[in-house]
Image (cartoon, rainbow, N blue to C red; front, side, top):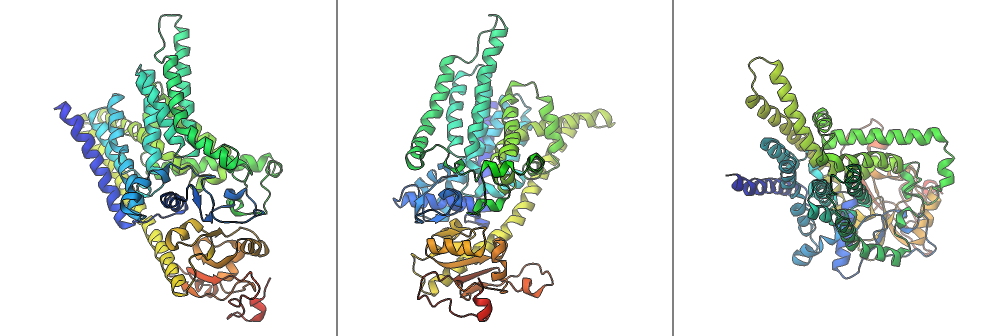
Length: 567
């Protein structure tokens, strides 16, 4: 019976996770935000034989944080994001063509592995069978993070890879040498998925150091469980995975981490600095804020991390049980690498990337905390149930523990349904508007080579096939300079993502002479403010951009001469 369960339960958990992801894919079959658009666009470029390149500038981080001297497209891709989420799409794109299904399929299949992996880890670390099963079900439907499990993004890659790396490192401490060696492979693949995957190398390395230190302290009574050859093999597997990518980065950009070269990622003070070519993101400008604002931003980043983890990964109600379960396991080798990584992730993200925390950077990595976190949390639920049994007359462990576990997992399922419903509405509305914009461009006879300026050029490449440049978060003369340099032909403004400088344009208050009257718009049907000017602004509008002498598309418009010729 035990052997049958060892096969049936993980298979059933995988099937459950895959079914949940398939349903969500059916509700929104497309990529849904810049990260996932980017990965799909790169994958399609690879499949088409264009190599690692993109026909857009999604952020000025990709071109050194400034307007290049020679503004050309396409450009080399993956300055900031890692390539694994694009690479895994290639087999299915070759089989099914460049479709949404082909891009999503590998993430549905790989991400679903997290559920049986969680069950296996729980059994391996000595959890009760019902705790292991509940943890597997919980990871199959991981609270508010469920909605991201279907996206062609690194959520579904990083979670099983990072979890496996932490688990294998812990097994190494218990004498499983092959497991420790394989941890290096998992760290390499995770690092090929996310920049901060390299943090996983720290708990793996510390596991080796800790093991050697304990052996040294024993004065010969205890031999090391991890041999030097195991450590070298672990490091070798990591390098075997990452070396080709490091070589590519050096060959193309001249450095291993080109995204940090300009300081735009490390020293930004507001998120809009990411898409500004005039803001000062030097170390000197960063330090000129003074110690007060710098500390405040770091504290705010840490608080945001706690909130994000509590809400998105733990559905709030599980937080005290996760804390209780981790406290009970605080001296366990099995949770040692996990606790080291979790501490590094929280502190490191808050110190280095506090501005980016609320824009997805932390959440993408925090999904790796979910499997071990759910195991600890559900052990905490069992501890709470046993406490209740001791203080409630007539209660028994056999009745209370299953009831508590079902309630805990049920809360996560409800959270998954609620957050999925909240996300799907805006995602579908944005997709429909962008598809309509693509049809409008085709109907207007726009050439396939015409470039767009948008808030999300990766997304418009995905839906319309047109390359382009991100709208700079700079004054209008600078926006005009960028449009001229890249020979932008069309400006697409979206109400939900318009920059401050272009709000008057989408609200039809003023329009520079180089922007023409809109040729297409999608009406806004969201909540009203009571201000007619704001309420009448469209959800999306397409404007001609005229930066070349003789282009008459911007010569007149409904705003009148004075407004149309505003600087």
